[in-house]
Image 1 (cartoon, rainbow, N blue to C red):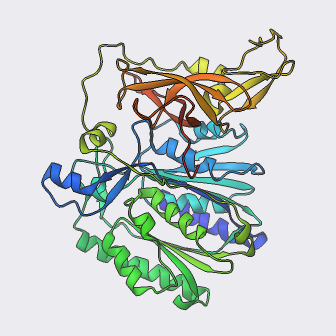
Image 2: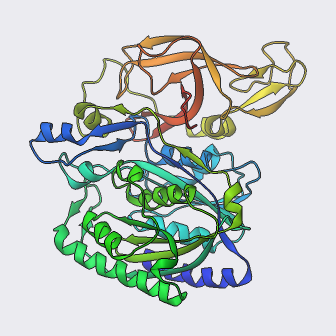
Amino acid sequence: MLLAYMDLLHVKIRKANQMSKIGITGWGWYIPRYQLDRSAMSSAFRMNSGRGSRSVAAYDEDSMTMAIESARRTLRAESNINNLIFSTTHSPVLDKGNASSMAAVLGLPFQVGAYDLGGSIRSGFGSLKFGLSQDGESLVMLSDLRFGRPGSDDEINGGDGAASFTFGENPVVEVVDVLSESSPVMDRWRAEGELGTQVWDDRWSADQQTALMLQVTKSILEKNSLTEADLGSIVISSASVRSVATISSQVKASSLHSSEIDQFGFLGAADLGVRLAWTLENAKAGQYILVVLGADGADAMLLKTTQQLSSAQFGRELVGTVEQVDVPTYLTWRGLVSREAPRRPDPEAPSAPAAARNHDWKFAFIGSECTACGSRQLPPQRVCMSCGAIDKHRTCSMSSVKSTVKTFTVDRIAFSLSPPVVVGVIDFDGGGRFRCQLTEVTPDDVAVNDRMEMVYRLISISSNGVRNYFWKARPVRENS
């Protein structure tokens, strides 16, 4: 169904491009700060796990929270989003969409169409085609967690990350052409309910994927009267290391994807997006960029940067200081090892009616500001806690306002996949005080007067499977 839908999108893209120039207007990407050394996996499982490290999402991160972080670095004040598309192979919830919740967190209006398009690595490319085919401005979010059974290919060679793109008129990067070839290559699969992906012998599957990737590359260049020498950069994404190496050696361009991205591992549905975002950051105006994906066939997208690239603002979050996690911690975070739970009641599921009544606060972290005295209330209140004025307030968004730790405490009893829980009282710049969980900290490295920023994270998973998300504070990061 996805492949047939992508063919329909290709027709719409051609028609849309004939009427107006639709292309990439912005981008941003996010890589978690934690990494797992592959040598540690080698020692733990007595197998060859290769060299280097892979990126690891924290215990309170998933594909949705990472996508939100990348989108917050993509959207601008002047953005007018009509459609939101979310793609991943590891969806936090099924049946209920994730995209509608993400639109609420990002503060987008109810009129935005929000859709989930996932289930396969190729869905990332399909989402880009979807965004390119829509009227108005679209936000495309690609995010993934890659994990499986201990010692599996996804655990060793995978990685976690996210990238987002906005599509619209007056693009920074024009989409010249898109070509696709589909083939049911049995290289990897995961049945519903299974923990990890199973893979076929890479020597055979790589030969199949590589031939398709070379064919679609040749076709799109010939169709547009270009040669390899005309390419400024080529972005290659495939779960097969062999395929990437072959394409890199046979298709010559001024530059290939960077080792700065390779170090994080293969990022699944987000891999193509993160590599493209990095390439655009390092591109020059007037360059052709060829994007090639090998998954269930092959896809190619030919891009050309415009003169607006030199003044374009992009958002990345690539940590300057990496924190290593050990194998037991990683396995616990991914739910592959169950820790002894504290002798405390199970987390309660959030109330659907209460969440609906407090929609702006629950999702977008919208507080209130008294129009009589100017003080801020978190959560929003009808009665000002400073001057007592009633119903004299306006809304104020606090998700992007930085804060300072006033005091904190350590809870060693509350349940957490990364105990102990650190709770702090933070004072926001310009006014407003709030008590919340602190994340990406330990009791030893957090201190009064530390500078903090707000992030949307997982709070708990109740016994009935409901995932409860809310805003936490974390130390300000270098590239935030």
